[in-house]
Length: 407
Picture (cartoon, one colour):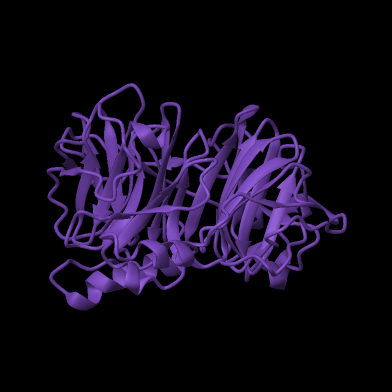
């Protein structure tokens, strides 16, 4: 569990653990357009023998919502544990996605080769595998990010792997990747028929329009070069840049937000720019995570820092990415020192949720100005890394194979 801020070791362990979990990928592609051979096809199939211990659960799609051990102040649990047919011990769940073309069809990915599918909108889940991956090889993969659009999906992971489906996950192809791209792939976004956008830990952004056979670079200047040029312009911590970024987010317009791997500053990028723009964090505490208030960067940003603090840009004020010091307002949250790892603001409402180390969950009904602790996961041995909503239905993913749902 992520320790309280009173311990110097546990405070910095949060950054080390979080970066190791979500920032390590070894997939590489070329900076210029590279033509690659046609990839082999793979079909999604039930788990091989190595997961025989849970074969019956996978085939039956046995998943149910069990009451949480702890309840919210209202007397009823806000979130419930979901039992999953997981065959490996204590996997970390990294991402969950549903296909907009078929909202009943969804997937979960994680480390130790974890790959689950639902075809009934999350009511039941089945463990899946890839036909062209050896069972002993597959367990070593860390699948980290997914994206779906109109039946087409992408998965990235480590070691070096990019998977692509054109038929809503019925079959998958492995897309070959070149080792020449700086940094490790961190994010992937489906953009339509054969189109996708991938970003890396070095700040490179690449697009493809032919299902990954060729990639085109979007950023002309590396982050290292940018920082060397602006290090005397008041960006604190730029001289300590280790060459990588993490917590990379993309909004619906193609603008990006990223945090330096050490958490001492953050960067923004807008389509058409030649380089990233670095920004001071505005706090003496290092950044743990960042994200968008709504679906666009200009509509607002949130930031969590070491010790469990949360801040956000001023409501109803557009974010000016040309400023080195973008103003943030600190929000009222009593996290007990546990790190906040992800935050979501529900569109068209004043509701917000925050999750973090030690199974901590906080809810807000006033747009994030104040937060109340939700005890639904207090007794679960987990760190909660991601929270996502699909309409009114929300999911929280964490370590030890923990999946929580609000329905």
